[in-house]
Figure 1 (tube, rainbow, N blue to C red):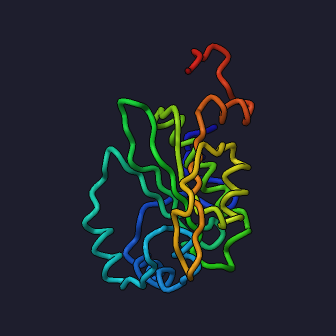
Figure 2: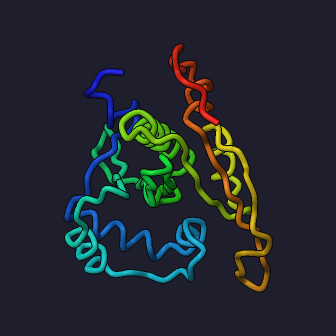
Length: 194
């Protein structure tokens, strides 16, 4: 991989926040389906001022890396991907990804952004493991994560309560060595990780 491809795929690139992103993020927050698949908290619309202030107040953190996902063709904001809650002493962290507009889902943006984030986490940051959680009825996300090599490691039964019914929350994990083997990029002299 060349250094100029660190943040670039075939469809999208990982970018830093821009001031004009706040309006788009606010619009996404008004999409109940997006908010409910993204998080277990109660969905609520948030203002563009909220997102602008959050982006301005956010200083680079050693324990979190958030990228905006922009299309290469149009330089259009379509989502985000984040590596966060990094525990450097244990060489692991958490990952989250979201594609905002329903019309942009299923086009490969989330898959490519996730792949770039995994490469960044494992090769640039040197992490050994990534975890994530996903609501059990979010079938597209489950398929994506399984396709990337994440394995189900547990679940919290009836963790999410919405519209009078409960849904499980699934925890998934991916080890760097598993990811490298699945990509055919495992170093030949890599030490075994337990």
